[in-house]
Length: 231
Image: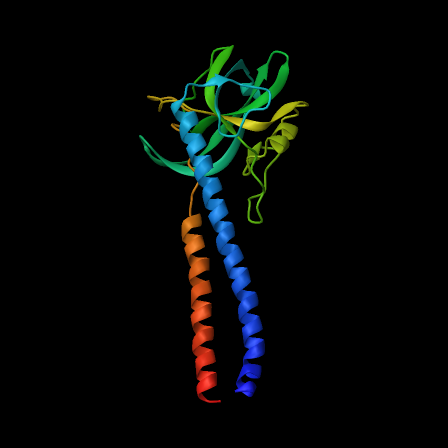
């Protein structure tokens, strides 16, 4: 019997170490679940509430209204997305235009999706303009992100610092205003119609890690019982 216990020493130690890791990952996903639920709830409350004037340090995804002058001569493009149009599916991108404000830094504005066709009918904005939208925090550049084309003002990561530098804006806010509005009848760009809802898969991830922890314990118990039976 003592020999059977000795044979189980290293498997038991390995099982405990793996169990600690799996449980830690499971509880971490539970924490992420509560955090994501709070984020989604705050976005829902912001969407239901009227927009507020843009503050100096706004909360991400808050719905705001801001006034200024659009610099359409400094327009840039962000992303690459195919959408259905009245003349069929078209490749397009989001129009990013700086908004100049009195006594405040410039603000990069995502006016919406525009088809990449030379004959696209673009809306001309009156100056000054009042825009309603939500505050979009900067995106992190991933390993597989496409390379930005500074010369052509084509960007694939929504990084306001990089975009502002390419547009030679000396002072710009570290976030982007994404305009919210109804779908236009015939003109572009097409703004966002609602605030974004981030994916929330943390419950399934937590169940996976906890399930693996249970499976690990079951495997070890079966292994240990066979060891004692043959001792």
